[in-house]
Length: 349
Image (cartoon, rainbow, N blue to C red; front, side, top):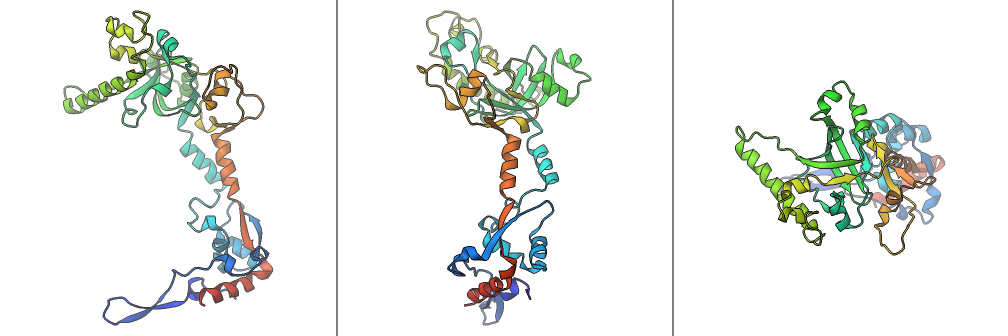
């Protein structure tokens, strides 16, 4: 008959206060590697697929007719030794809740990469890979579609996937009236129909009533502009009044230059109102010009090709990882008593 797990651990005589008052404590530091129990350790176990609602104690009850052999799951499975929080599969309901909390607040779209910096400057176009998106700047940088009157906070830009992740899509300017009665999800869909965006810097502080805070954010804006503009300073030197040269000729300021840059999307098929459906990984790439070295992650985006099932979404990735946790080793029911006896004999030796 199985007994309490820790009651079978060896005792340790310990002087708690250092004055000779010894007490017997359970030595929970003891452990036994499964390989020490039997030369053919594989003969001890089989496999079990964790189902919705299963817990270690209920699996023990199901297999061994008592909940007290729950500990054997932790002995056989290294993944469980650190605890259940990240190692135990989520139930279907908990999985959907996790997806909603972790992903559904966000939307995403792939940014079309500009492969020639000089040409992108002439056309006032760029991509996110050349501007700093450090965490300290993101509270004040907004991605905006001036044609739609919508803007969004930026969570991050994934340079591997050329993918912008945004949230809190809200109307501004003419959009305040246009979208007065539009739901949040519909705003997401509308925002993603734009084929070009610009960056805006918004200072949330009042220059009069919060002068110090306002000045600090303005200083941060100057820092961002000076950092972002470095890429463009030496490009396009032969064409007056185009790109960075326009600043020297007085056509525009550094600020207007950086905040009029256009960021293009990769188009239909590369926008996701719910970030759960956005591409997590591309599996196949196609080149179209062998004379140019492209970033590997950009091939599918550049060509606009998603042929067959060559991508995996964030949702699918999480589902695969969750399902992979379901299969665990369990002691064979006919050997559980022998396993119990052998384990604690070795533990106490």
